[in-house]
Image (cartoon, rainbow, N blue to C red; front, side, top):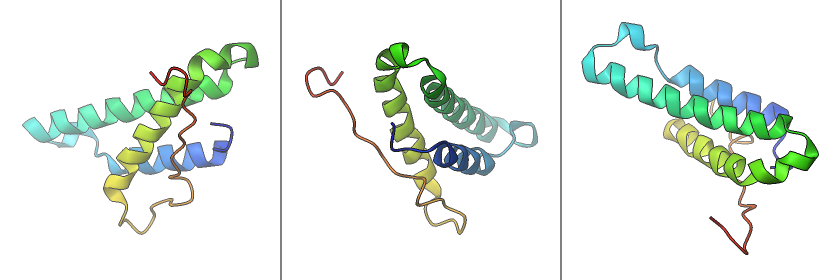
Length: 103
């Protein structure tokens, strides 16, 4: 996660959230889909931000979750990979999983 900058986090999070429509204007199933996407994106963003703001002595316990959350956020962003504002330089996956106990 160290190679991902705060700017990359902000740009990718902003890009993803800007692509998900507000639920109030949507009917039925589209509303539920948008609400689910927004909830999933916000949880991934929160996990990454929590890890980045954790004290160094606690960050070891949050790094795996933050790495997985970042990779999921990148995958969400790739839904719109052909969008002209797609932040390709921010949508970089990281695979810093512990090989001793990956999950």
